[in-house]
Length: 297
Image (cartoon, rainbow, N blue to C red; front, side, top):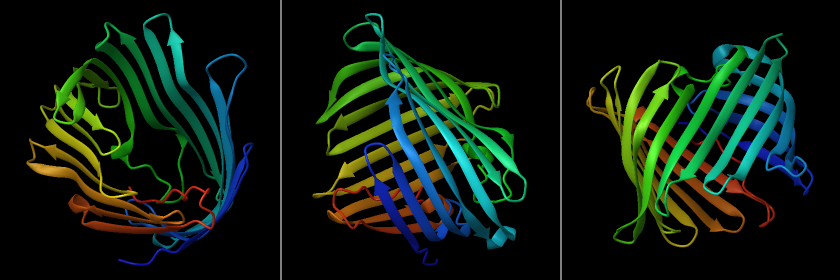
């Protein structure tokens, strides 16, 4: 346990955002590093009359990671493509994001990362839909000299999913959708069967309970993702992944986000499976400013 102080200075206009970050930081695996970094970004803008939007960001700074004995600069450029919602014919809707980030370091190393999440929904009836989705997080090239900048192998994903969904059910106060289908992991070349349901009672309660059976490894995993509003401006969350083959929780996280006033926010998170406790305090000088994104997983 330790104190991880960070200072943010943010400037925002409709055309751009700039942010200066100075202080200590920590990644989701508790690796501490020091940084002095400035970033700037352009919000997504529509490309002509199409539904596609283009945005980007750039950053440069100095970093020091004691555990890896590395101290050097890092700069990055990022391009973001997104389709908030595009209607294809009378029944189909496309949404998605795709990001390419290229970082280069003072050591001469460089790394490219591709991130994407795309979904095509075809409405079969008023309550039934077929959803084809694809998500990816891959290191396209190179490597980083820092440990905190390294993407864990377990977080890499290259997966396509086909689901049949049906909505219109009620579970108490929850408007519920049930779903089932198949997914394919291109990294492990393994198919899985997927089924579950999700329910919402905005803004008070939201939950998703699902199960997946890997046809290659015979692993069956149960995932619960739930959040509930408690009082004005506060929300509790629970996220668990249970592996029935190993008889253990791969993830078990509790969280509390409390916005105590317009300018003050506290985030608490306990990761039981990893025995980690997170505390983040956000202070904004102006109620109209958003709180900087923290590192609590």
